[in-house]
Length: 338
Image 1 (cartoon, rainbow, N blue to C red):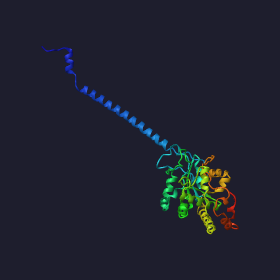
Image 2 (image 1 turned 180 degrees about the horizontal axis):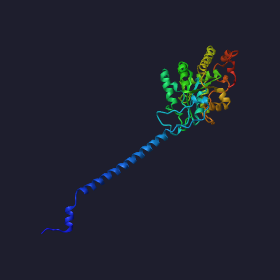
Image 3 (image 1 turned 30 degrees about the horizontal axis):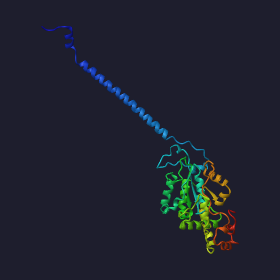
Image 4 (image 1 turned 180 degrees about the vertical axis):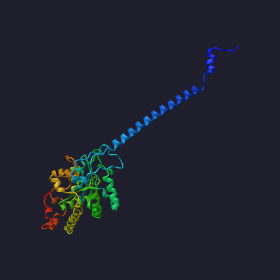
């Protein structure tokens, strides 16, 4: 006998299609919701990325400059590191043009005692770097782009960067191209010379002797940090060739004048070693010239040769006889007399 109960008849007459439609609708709703969520996430990510780019590329505030200063202010972007918080610190470029034993080493230690100055030393004493104008320019590009690392490199933000360049290290030989480079890059020049060229000659001869004989326990030192070491080096009294003395002094003067003539059209300052020793306000002039904050500059170097020249030369009487009555007679005077 057949079962005709109400429940059994309802199950037999239920359609399958509406159930499938409900299932499909539910699946589509789920896919749509997931799509919307993913779209919103991508939008947020892209917005954040865009904002980050905007922040990182925010231009530096325009420095308060006089019109003439603009070519001498730079914002280098090193290839070897990121300047980070220093990226908006303007940098001035400079070059110290000098001759050996003219106080340039001492002067550079003074500059490097400033927390915002990096002077990288006598980098062109290495011959391959000055082999031709291309190697010179490549070296300078690396230095002024703040990609040159030396003991002078600073942890603080660098505001002035430069080097010490001797006249006989390719500077005179390639003066035309170097002058063009200085002009195009906005490089300021610091001329540093010595007035008393006889004292410079004594320093050169004594330094050459120590390079060969190494008086300080078998170690050669061009500069010292103690009075004891200075006294040992000063104990050697060089012999000056009196016959060639005046021609050699004339040649040094000629070379110095030639360098000043070649680079005189740069923005420059003229310094003399003796003036720096006697008048410490000259160091303030240098800081003002480099447009850096004034600080008390210090150096640990100790002067080697001082006092009367009669105590420093092995043939003092011969030198005195040759120079008396000449334009170089003033070189025989007391210590640092101008």
